[in-house]
Amino acid sequence: MTSAAPAWRDPQTVRSLLTECDTWAVVGLSGDPSRDAFRIAALLQARGKRIVPVHPDAPTVLGEPGYAALAEVPFALDVVDVFRRSEAAGAVVDEALALATVPRGIWLQLGVLDAAAFARAQAAGVPMVMDSCPAIEWPRLDRQEP
Image 1 (cartoon, rainbow, N blue to C red):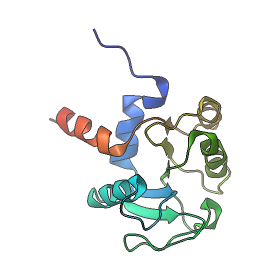
Image 2 (cartoon, helix red, strand yellow):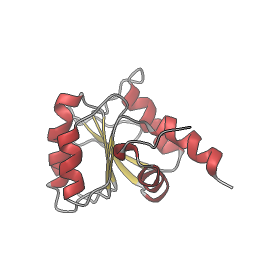
Image 3 (cartoon, rainbow, N blue to C red):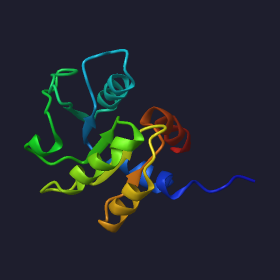
Image 4 (tube, helix red, strand yellow):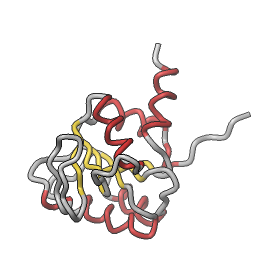
């Protein structure tokens, strides 16, 4: 008997963000190819997503110009993907929720949990995934496709 996924890893939300959202801000993305954020951003690109690096140094990464903060991105974002520690993730969620065009979803990477931030996103009507990774979820989706 398998238990249901926690609310923050709702399979429908995961599927929707991975299949219906094209522009992903990757918060914490630097040009260091040894970092998880870099590898996941490359995976997102390989899956046809546009990545938007968000890092205080605002580097160009994987051919995409970077921005120092979410508020500096001059176009709408579908997903804000957060590569920050749990204690810093809530502030990023709040920045995402404060954008003029609120993203269609927020994703906190594997090991990153903030229940209060999850509740704020839910209250704002923004789906959120926590403690997961597209690199883990896509193969699951691929196995489920007919």
